[in-house]
Length: 275
Image 1 (tube, helix red, strand yellow):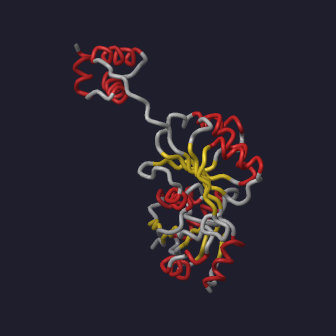
Image 2: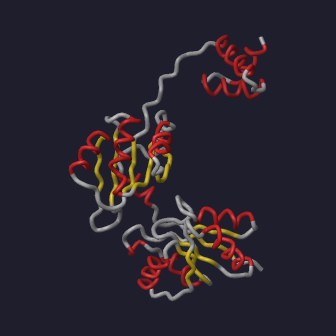
Image 3: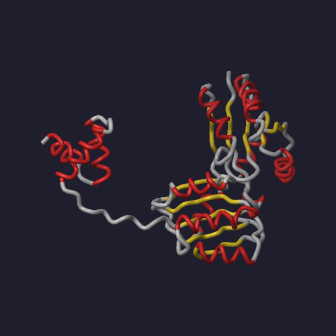
């Protein structure tokens, strides 16, 4: 009988944030797959737990993932942890979860520390709708392309960033979104020197040009103001449908896309296109 995979979130700074249920799963699992065993052993020592550890990280996931899956299929229970926060979020654990899901292995996620939600909740920016964008590429062209795709994003955006890349990232964000865009820079969350700087992108560039950043950052950025919708007539909508069909879309897909673009009822757009 196959075992199962537990996703166990670990503290993002304060070891006291580990939950009782996480303690129980870590102590009962047959083995623990860890992003960095040196980091995880410190947590286990804090908890007084001795457990078999295997390393599972970005550069060995292709080779190690299959072996971990084999052990689970043989009946063992694995607890997957990252260095901080929830595994499988901007983390190679995503691949192991997919392998287990494809193999029909039960995967259970335990709620716990998450830098994304922690930063969003204290950012002072809208929290109702948001998008998590993870780490931007280190390649300038790819990073700028990513940001260009988000220029019209109206939801609050959340990014992770390392201190040595922060200033160049802020400059690229200011160029893409405008220097007046609001940003909350959350540093060293839950740790002794936790700090939240609520400012604009332009002011953030000035701040960290004068004061080199330290610690890991979560960047929470206000979304763009919603674009004003211009009223479109049904005749114009019908012309748009015809144009999309000439580009190769089916009538059904052309009507659906036009309705989304214009905000007009799909049935009305369809009838106008037929007329």
